[in-house]
Image 1 (tube, rainbow, N blue to C red):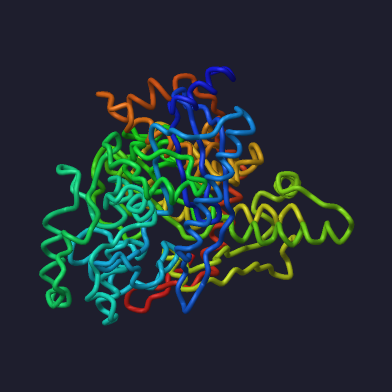
Image 2: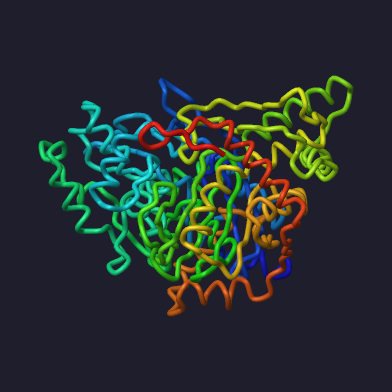
Length: 533
């Protein structure tokens, strides 16, 4: 669209809004019907470790959303000289999993427990055995059952539990709903019914620890909806909550809220079977859309859903870029002491380019990027650690390559299960995330770490809020197309992408690094036997 056409689209409300609440940033984007971003706004936030729990205050949720929307509205006025009054469709996405529990008066019962917590080990183990289905510690049902096992007083008052995206959507529309992808991180989904697995719901209800409570698990979970369904309409109260200026009209179509994994799949056109994507940020996860079931249950592989209800093998790790960001801050502070103010993009580009001069095995260095606990490697609490021996080749290039290698290490260990034991193959693996803002470097390291070609698309840089805006647009259209065809034929008609293949020498170097990395981990083994690497 040209400037005049875009202005007309804004005037007539032919625009869609996507808002995503990520781990470190809340971002809102506005798109037209040709899926181009025409305005955006953002808000930086950070989780807090309070009384042994990673959390965000709900007040900060709304501060962030409102400031992001205010920036976006100002962006519209600046570019197109008009106010944003009508929006066809709105979609909310956020970090998956976690635990938000409310009573009958819609009062939050305990502080929001995010995906980053690994405090539900007993519940996750017991439910996995009960269901014969992997229940990770992050999942909402694991949090609920752990609260029951802990005899927490709030459990008897529970009337509704949901995710962060579900909570925001509830407040904007009055509807207690979730998109099927986000819901699959709350409780296992039955692919044949596109809702929670009834057999597992019954098993949960019949647990001795659950029976004393007056609530029914089926009634306290959000309703499940696939992509393309209408989840509700923006209420007058919701419009006032979103736009504090009072300009925005009520009535916008609300899309089923999704998790960041779902919007990542949409943003990389990875919802068709045998496609996959990898998202990297504070956490990292790979999503492999399955064409057949896995042969058995794996504790490090989640089975979740695409936004339209296809099974996905998900490898989720709690830690990825946080340690890199911490070290980058140190280098930026040092540069500032020398009188040089470096913008983030230049800082990261300079540091990442140094890694291209490193030894293939990163010089014998090791790093453990654990800002929080990591389930795949059995690390219970955050302990970031950089390690070297007297014989290591300690240089800036090797140090930076070690940081990149370590960022992908837990993900690589999880992916090994799918590749080596289940022989899962994907026709394309597309990556997105902040580590790829510097072209080539992070993408090539990831290709070497996983020993598979990695593709980065130009649209992947738009991120989750753009993917959520696309889902909102899809819901508003009420088309007979399925999501796969809609993305192929309407959204990604002429995709721009770049694919990098593994480099044999660096693949071998990463293998040496990961052997060293594993050797430094505490290992839990059956019958007290120590596994040697």
